[in-house]
Image (cartoon, rainbow, N blue to C red; front, side, top):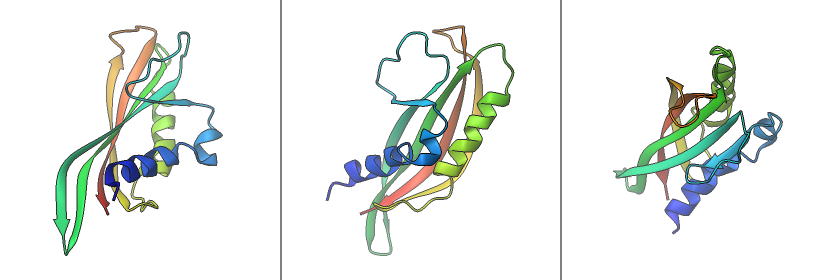
Length: 131
């Protein structure tokens, strides 16, 4: 039972769908170095936080964070367009390896402290994964 690998496979698999690929937005794991001169991208972080035993099933609960980066000084529209795309991929889904997601939220953080040419928002979704 590879629950953590199955969870990650469910979430990362959403970024391999035609819905996401057609956006031409690069998606990186949170611990990857982003290539220079990349002005629009997302970073994916899957955080398993606690175990969940429910009606004879064992699982884990956590949060999916997708850090959205767009060009600064362009307004909020593009950030929210990407959040809407992420909603179609990740909100209220039952995924193949036993991951179920709930409602999403978007937290607008503003100009990135490490690169003032970028503007950032964090899209998040709670999940439960059952083996």
